[in-house]
Length: 161
Image (cartoon, rainbow, N blue to C red; front, top):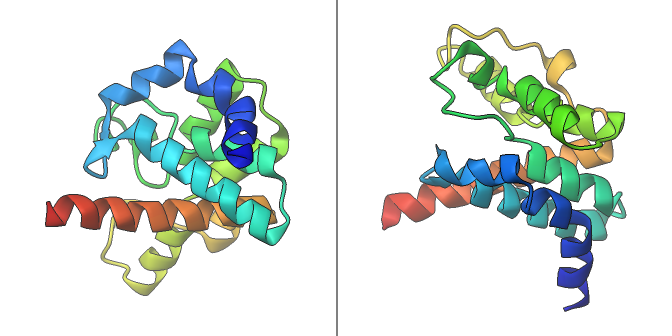
């Protein structure tokens, strides 16, 4: 119960923000972006406790990592490798995020960059640079890992339903 209270104390302003609530209208991994971001944020929070990372940063950056409007195929800025920058810009516009939180948002798709390096035929149009997309902090790596794990969970959950 203590963890839930701590989580909502840090996340409350984002979870109730009118712009963030718009994410409930966007489908993402078979669910909506609001729920996806909340799952990533909460898992990041739990991982941050284990790895002694900054819980406030991972909660906020985890919530805002997919803070873009529309689908990935709607616009170039929403694509797999561009949406982290779009999400970071939106987070700066609507919330008082730190530079470290912005970097964590911007590098959360590192797992996709690795996939592209191993399987170059995935998303051929997008260019992936390991150095550019690599998380710069422990918190950024946690968000990347949590996003990957939650995405696998969501894909499998909705595939089996």
